[in-house]
Image 1: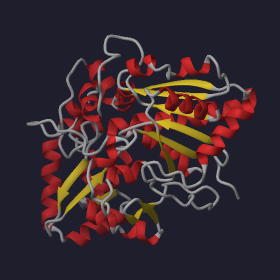
Image 2: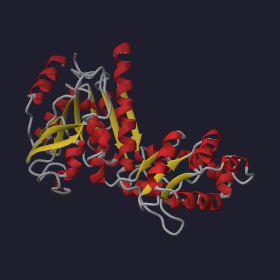
Image 3: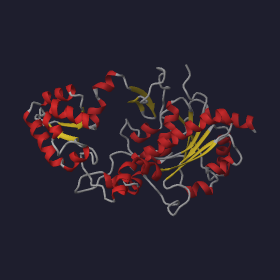
Image 4: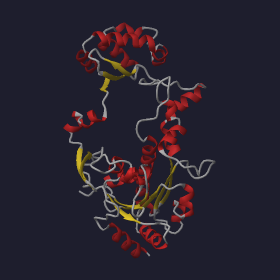
Length: 385
């Protein structure tokens, strides 16, 4: 059975994470992606580190399943080649600054003025228009602007999210928008101009605490390892010193937690704990009860009680422990890819469509077009003109 996006050709003028991670999702679904890179050096994420057998961990993560071409887009001949490649593509995506893309004539609306069938996607830090449109943006800057840093950390100190959450959010909105545009084009024959802002993407992800803060007229308090709006929902120490995460999301779950885990059914009728707002207001008293029970009961017994009570709980793992997670290993969620410096084990795509395996994936060396994608794009462009 063919992959869902078999036959879809994508040209990507991309760097860092947002656009590369979006096009990696397309490649995982069977699209053919041509990555346009600077001659001689490639995009800068190739050189972040050498952690994966000599290849950058970021580059391995965001660029599997692609082909590469070296083009200096300020060189007239290379620019002409890029224009022909775009003319042969179903999808073009870029994450240059808005000003740079506009000067180069590579914004979606500019390209679609002469190619209405093209699906063109622009990713930028702040969006097109407004006072910040020309400002440079990276993930951490957007985490700060979108409120993610203010919401993360302890009461004493803010903290960034520990991975590229602003890049990933914009990548996934670009990916889903491109899928929707491909679907619509089947019915209408028309392409689409797609604009994705990193700020707006992450603002959407911080919307619930923002709505709560605006509605209440208060500033959200950072809760560290606790959930700021739900209780009990956080990390607790067991008698063996290990840390466990528990989550009680409803009054019904709290009744089970009090009876089956804490061994005191009366707690669910305590006026301090009868609903979530009460539990948040009296979190110190509630956690005193939880910590006392967890310290006095053997750790495995607590885990058994949580299972019997159907209370969500989890271990707090570091990356090494996650890599050897028994659930991921049991489900064979790993695959081997070829990188410019050798083979590497990576995660499979986190979806399964009709049991069709993910396409065999290679992390391209600079300028490596192992499948002849450039020639096919140029041939298609010539045919369509």
